[in-house]
Length: 196
Image (cartoon, rainbow, N blue to C red):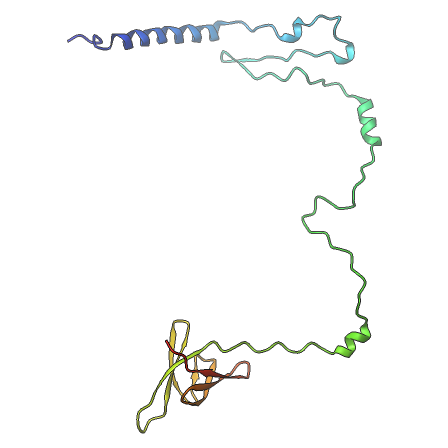
């Protein structure tokens, strides 16, 4: 059995790639730095104020370090500083560095204090509705009537005078409705018998 006889084309391609890699690594390690493009500009084109100095290149372990951009002029331009000092910044008075909404200016009130005094204080809010459902009752001879109440998935069994869910008191049981009092809010409500 011959090694590489079946894959002769692959063996040739691997050898060629190896030689190419060795050549490129040698060229990278032993090459000298190229002249910078700024050195090729004739002196008659540049004025002393706009001289572009070539960027310094540093070799580290055979690689060139990143060079500074050649278009940066490190000289201080006093005319530009003066122009920026004389610029007046105008805006709408809003501070863009505060993260809050603008407060609108108050609009003149249409109602006077006398009109508000005549109206009086606002009425108290209505008590919350009782959200129990009456869906049945049970009665045995000699025992008081008991009703079945539901609230969501909870089912309660109570008779007259008992407190349900530590919040509602059963006052009166009729054949088609029940009177419930909300103990916390002093609210009474008749709840009709519901089907289903």
